[in-house]
Length: 362
Image (tube, rainbow, N blue to C red; front, side, top):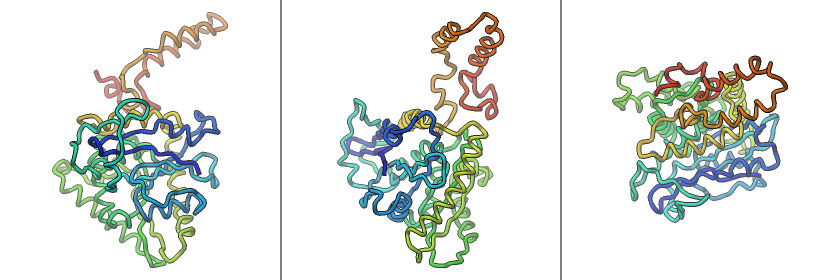
């Protein structure tokens, strides 16, 4: 089963992050990358997460490691009833692990680590760093975020992690189509669990944790929550059934949410290809490591240089050399050139998502 480490956190010379820029190429080496539009499903947890993920990847023969990795890995899921690839982002970045202090962090070359400038050497920032990674890298790329309550101090722990993620994420410019679904896996021994009660408890705790923050004192807390997530729901996993059975039921639930997300992203032209995901990851990491990390922005991440037409003369010259006649100038070149100049700073479909003065500020 193909897998690749996506993000590595080192503590040896102060907190630093490494992005494996070859991740997607390694996972899709036998395909035409540009034509692939993978779904990314992020799993956050440790023991229960690993047990379920191993089954989803094919069981004992999948090659999924027995030991914990405390980083972020990507796995290519087996194709089961989908015409598109599905990637499982496997995150244990929120867990403290002594091995990070022994991880060498080169500062130059293709394997260079980026120092997280807003942290200090010697301090433990596991939850803070995890909140920023989940909110500014994994959430914008993921269709579904799956939290495993058993690994995260129960429903209360999940609510705390979601609150930290929201704090790290605001203010952002997510369109509705790009907000991930949140699925919280809660173990149960009952065949008829009260999911509504657990749902209510989770949201009540989340509202309480956010209410402690003065920033949200005068805010509509529900509006704050759903500005970051498309939905939040609890999934009860029956513990007396086999891991294989639990994983298949969970797979079906994830598939429903994934299809909804893909449908929404596709209609809003925000369904990312392999090339989009690779480019966005690099820009997201650079932004996250800045001295004063800002909330994630599709606008600034996809157009880091603002209004830029640096490659326009080269492309225009190539276009003019291929025209069959001068008549094409007004029919094709002039409208196309006008669009290029006007929309140079726009990410996909942003003319429907943002006001012009937001896009062209400065």
